[in-house]
Length: 224
Length: 318
Image (cartoon, rainbow over all chains, first blue to last red; front, top):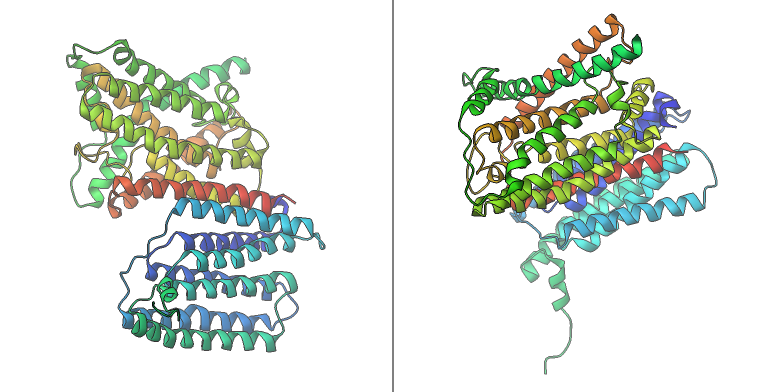
């Protein structure tokens, strides 16, 4: 039972529960600035989780990855995204989600799916395997965000949230990735954001909207 | 001797609950006024209003059926019945022992059913509008409330209110468990919707097009109206006390010694004052949302309660 666990484990579980909540909040937001704020909160929680893991671990390298997470995902990436939003002037754009309640129920089904997947393959019977469920759910919910939102910038947020989920999974399952891999991924993500920014402007100048569904009309079918 | 005393105490507790309910509503109203730099009416104003309404002549429409006549009495009785089971000062009173948490929801639903019927009874447009709105909101709030109670019941492994609260008193949480955080957040939204507070309904005005609760009781007057108003004040207090009992149960008495009861009373006063202060601050900072946005808020509450259940299963049960 929860109340018999030491304080440290309790804290870790609470943080993971809040991370799951942010993944759900992503799905309900239809304003881009709110999505970016939620992403910032998710990254803050991830930083706290990494710091906690570093505190309880022999391997103190995790403090460095907590610092990297904080600088890149809490400060830089949200800042870049806000600059893009300002330049593209889409701050108040609302993208409609069809059937928000149905979407949330689908998300709940995904969480249950993850739970059964992990419960079926419960190799290590420690608390971490339960937190792995949350990490996996965050990855899959990020994918759901990619599928259901139609704006390019929400896709970037979905991508980043999936990356957060993978990072969290690595954190709880194996006490963090090797430093070299982690640095590589961190810089990849940073470069990705810059590239996405370039793409936003190109997509907008060629099809005049950021709604990626409109890309479907750019096929090469010959008009008869 | 002790067995006899505890029944007397439970009765006194219920009387205190019913008598103090208008005071809590008055307190929240007064705090809200003070926070908005207004002088505000006295905390005792709800008592004066009730007294005035009891004195006034009760006028009933010609075409009112028997439902319209007995609904105020029914609602008042049911609300008192529920308030008797809510632990105000002592957690294991005999009334609380007979309270099953699902029956509580059923009793609330019964009261709401008859209120909605009486709104429809006269056949005016506003009554019907209010009833249909109330039913729409409650059909969303009720499953969420059930889920919230399921999480609590799973935590305590019982659906008995007294057992659940005593479980939370005895477990020494250093922190909240995640399922309780989500359930508490969901419960707050549901309580706001059920008691008609600000983001869903505005208790201060009688603006025709936006009101929900007030629209249903528009045809009532005199002592009928007084009973309904009093019942809704008791209902507000029930949700407040239930919230502090379930999520902040420290200080609640479990035995009948003078010391423990004194501490329990002080803790209750502090908790209720803090809660009404928080509520007032939240209410002056929020605006009433559009009626058609309300289902989104309630589905978010449903989601929070569902996440509470999921978190309990995934993260807390080994």
